[in-house]
Image (cartoon, protein in one colour):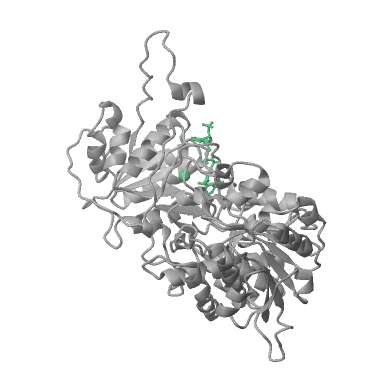
Length: 609
Ligand SMILES: NC(=O)C1=CN([C@@H]2O[C@H](COP(=O)(O)OP(=O)(O)OC[C@H]3O[C@@H](n4cnc5c(N)ncnc54)[C@H](OP(=O)(O)O)[C@@H]3O)[C@@H](O)[C@H]2O)[C@@H](O)CC1
Ligand SMILES: [K+]
């Protein structure tokens, strides 16, 4: 299980730990882990001589981490330049250590005043957005960054190295434990400096090399010493802001982050990419787009939830001894193979089809018979002993899956089930509405997807005694919440929590990072259990009909007896892994039927461990 904790929890735990350690010890642990990670990214096994590193240093301890790490790297031969974004508030210990190690210190040029004739109107972006400049839009991530393969992580508390692909973790069944070939490496440059530059400051030894680069563009406006240092660096360390950050990057930082992204340098974020919100995973304005993130003590939710997770690159957790001081209940958790293996229902020798659970699927219509077939395909591979299909697409279902029990309806006449799935391809006709009333009134777990979500009565859901699971994508979630789709996509964690609270239901929000929030307000003492984030998704799953398969497999897990949050998160995990297996290691377009067909392979992969 990979777990993430809120900033408040991290601060409390750090406070406890720090009170037991000599002053500064924690930061040294962080800096040591950071320096090791940077060295590994730069020139594996080749030493650091000739490597150029630029540190972007903000006003807090995040900048302190960068400076101490930079000092360590400079002592090992790298040419290091520190760009101070708040020169009068730079971490004093870190700055002293950096200076002593020969790190060159530069400050970015002040932002130029916009040239404007006296009395002229301010430009449009200033009128609309106060004093902020237009937002910096970072470029898309590469396939290598998104499609990384790590598998079966141990608990983060015990994990001190190894890169994790952002949002990944389940692997594709062929992974080897820690991420291999997934971490970003140095992209260009031979690491040899030209020397003889005009960089000032205390450059000495190898650091003079970095100074040479930094001096290149001094005094040329956009090419000031700070930007030039970033442009010439092989590796840029983002120590602008960490868990103390609020809002997006400020203009000077945004300019440097943009220069870093546009260069060939590997960008390494310290603790988390600056500009992303550690707790919510939201980005308000510009953020650093890192190739790798080295985080300390534990994961923060923003490292696992989009859109922030899209900025992290591969993630490495450095153990600084925080584990014993973190509470049992995290804010967010991501299941791994072993966790899901422990949840999957396995028939006992005395099991029969009824004891394994019967799942009822109310889906499809004359217009969309395929949705019924796909939902049944998922349900047949979700662990229930039998699938009962109810609706007008019985012929299509039986032709494809003769093992299905079919009934024309209504659901309450179809025979006993242990869970209902309703919605895929259902339409919104009279029969669909009646069927929805029927299953909402049932006393067994109910999963509502797709068209079913449009027919939902919030109060009836809230009044249900048995668990309800809703599985919207962002557009459907937006309709349920009465907000724009973009709002849901920008605040996925807050949106899924709000839906769960408003409907009193477990909510699985599909998308770039699929989230599962437990039914709000029913968590009992100590608050609701953690929200779960699914690590197995892949962009190849974004194709018609895969949601129908997901609702079938999850409903089947409900019928087999899994608690709602477990069924939803195990269903998402199996479905994501099946998508990866179907797409293959290299990746190829897949159809929803391929995903359903790969579900058995996903089961076996998970059970193999
Ligand atoms: N505690 C520990 O034991 C350990 C902590 N560790 C490290 O410390 C980090 C937390 O350090 P922290 O608390 O000093 O906060 P941090 O994130 O560096 O910056 C806060 C400053 O930034 C500023 N600022 C705010 N928003 C901004 C923005 N958008 N853009 C620009 N600037 C912005 C704000 O100042 P302002 O300018 O607003 O007055 C404020 O002063 C943590 O992430 C980890 O790296 C590790 O060493 C392990 C041990
Ligand atoms: K940072």
